[in-house]
Image 1: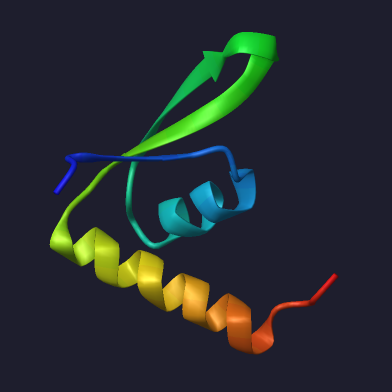
Image 2 (image 1 turned 135 degrees about the vertical axis):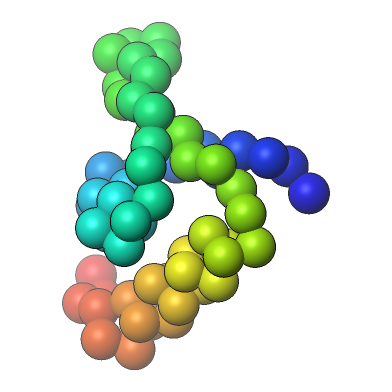
Length: 61
């Protein structure tokens, strides 16, 4: 399993941060921020639950 989780989704990063997971923010080509989290089993469970909650209650476009 990789030891880092990378995302460009600011809202997902803020939701994970609100759950207590700290992230590093790097700027990649084009000036787009990339959020980097430490990947653990507990983090994976939190990420899964957030995605499932989004599927149930989130707006669809």
